[in-house]
Image (cartoon, rainbow, N blue to C red; front, side):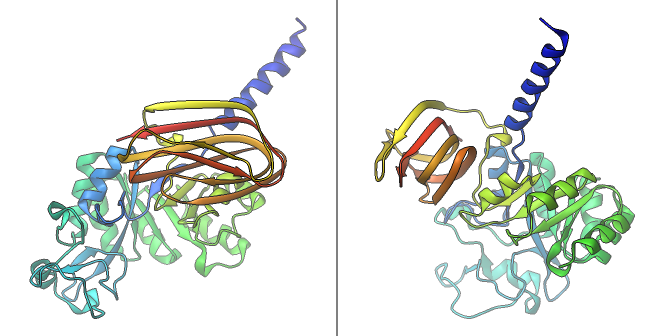
Length: 358
């Protein structure tokens, strides 16, 4: 065989392999929480992240009234807490973390859960970091508090991530650590200024945004070509696909599960050459309910499809030409059914459905 043809074949194979391995890394937003059972921003959510295979969890750091750094999403609304002394009743009034001492927080409130063993106090930053270290999880601190960076560096070494919208705060993180630093783009509407700020921060760094219109393929390519990480931050369904297809390197999510997490499949089913006419459905029902599970779909198709994942998330997809799409979700107490319906005539060249049980 001609040497030039062999080289071209190897390049083509390499391109196919790279495409198959180009899925972003998934970070678990507020830890791997699961509906009403595993509370967000809890030690249990760190332990569940390890179980599901997430390597990184995001957590939110705020001060209590007496300047204890605690882990809670909203500093001005303790909506994720329930009272201990009133039969674990939900809060009926708005309480601020900044107006309560940590000893009172610890004594009177716990995180909500249908599992009574999971009704634990709001953790301190140090408690959560120690849980991360014990479980081999990298914590991403959503924090602009320089003191929190010092605690993370002391407990985790350089194995942590600083994440916020203040470039000045992130420069403080860089002074004490070579950890990854992610700049929230909320305060930086101009792309050129973003590159200036990243250059000023230096080292391992990148960007994050909740604006799913901003991370265009061109912007993602420009960032990644310069060695920066690109994080799509908690994109809602169905816009999480935008991040996956536009070339982000990280997806921070409350629900997303992808094969890049490295979980061991319990079942893999592949279907080829499925032709669905308008309104026709392709349904496969699972045998039973899974307590902790996940499902991913890797499909190549053209036409119109509506896909319903096990947790009820629905995606309406349209491709004029044959195109590959990856979907996935983690779930609790669900059946891992396959539910697909077609709009106009649709041809699915290949569909691989992978189920996981944890």
